[in-house]
Structure formats: C-alpha cells, structure tokens
Image (tube, rainbow, N blue to C red; front, side, top):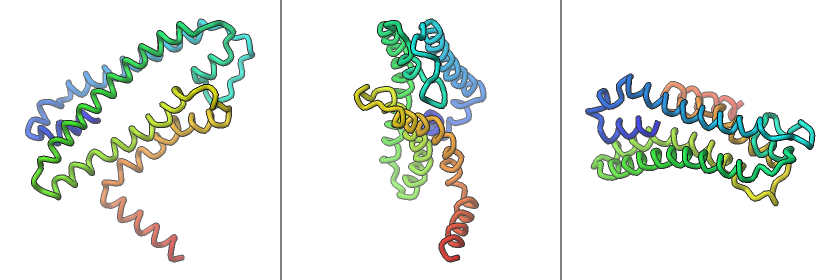
Length: 194
C-alpha cells in the first residue's frame, strides 16, 4: 500500500508502468512468501516444544507467548533466533513503508497547491491509520515486560491487534467515498435528533 501511494503521488505519470499487474503479483508473492516463511518457522518451533503445564491457553487462539508459558523446556535460545528472523522481516517491511512515506512527505511538502497537499495526505491517512491500529497493540503484546502480564490484559491486547484492524479496515478505507460520508452524516443526524 505504501509503495502504491508513493508511485501515485511521487511518480503519477509512471504509475501504469511501475505498478503493472506483474509488479503487483511479485510484491504480493514476496509479502505472502515472507509471511509464510515466518509462520512456518514459528509453527515448527512451537510443535517441537514439550508441554508440561497442560494444553489450555488463556487466549482465544494459540499465540506463541501463551504456548511458551506452557512449555517445560528452556526454549529461550530457539525463541531468540526466531525473534531475530521475525524482527528482520518486520524491520524490512517497516523500513520499506517508512522510506515510501518519507518520499511522499517530501513530495507533498513541495506541492504549491493546498488542495493538492490535502488530497495527497487524505490518500495516505487511511493506510497509516490501519497500520498503526495493528502495529501499536502488537508491539505492546510482544515487547511488554513479563512483570505487567496478566491474562485479561493479554486477551484485550490480542483482540485489539487481531480483531479491531480487520473490523475497521473497510470503514477507514471507505471514508473517502463521498456517498458513504453523506449517508453516515444523515444517520448521525437521525440518531441525534430523534
């Protein structure tokens, strides 16, 4: 998404050639492939752990930190290696997104028209909102110190990063749709004045 925004704002005349269907397929394959590789490594590591504290996790899905709590082996070194691989993949994605948005910001600040700057920023804000809605609670969930861990806090944070972004994603991206905005305003007026 950030690369799409970068091309649309910084190189609009080259949009068709730089974001061809082949380029989109390659980017999708890279994203899916890296996600699959990370998931495969995490799953392989998880299945190799012996569980000695039962098999009931205190979450609504099997998260790695919850499974590590049930393990009776010292999986610290394995987990550090996987954390480094995952951090490299995540940092690569973060770096790509950050560089795209730095270039966008530079291009937008050079625009002479206030309306052009507003349009460019309104194109980028939905993507950044969804990314932040996902990354902020996920970072908190995986990087918080164990001393502040509690089952209810862990569950709430897991819901925040796994349920909220997909639920609000259609709403955030459709807010640029003028018909939806008009309908939403009418709905709010009806609710407030009845």
